[in-house]
Image 1 (cartoon, one colour):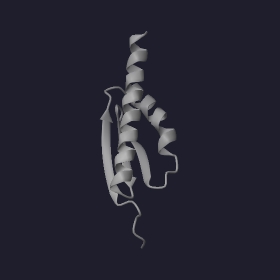
Image 2 (cartoon, one colour; image 1 turned 180 degrees about the vertical axis):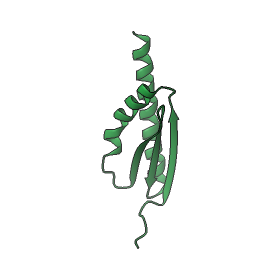
Image 3 (cartoon, rainbow, N blue to C red; image 1 turned 90 degrees about the horizontal axis):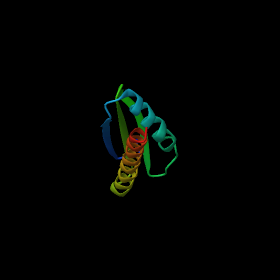
Amino acid sequence: MTESPFAWTASVRVDVGSPAVAEWLERALRPEASREVPRAHAELRRDSESSLELTISARDSGAMRAALNTYLGWVHLSLATAQAAHRSK
């Protein structure tokens, strides 16, 4: 059995309180999570109808920091966009 090259793992649960927003957020992040990145790997899964779980695995602490900062930034931007779109209706 081979050892996983990803020694660092972090999970983030984003509860948005709405199934529609959770689905929208998942669709916004899915293309990024499916990208091949040499030092990190991300997985998305619906934790419940109104929440999303992001799990990041990384080879080292620097890759983990970069991946977490990137994904948390995308989550923040996506949710801010959804909120702005809702206010403009």
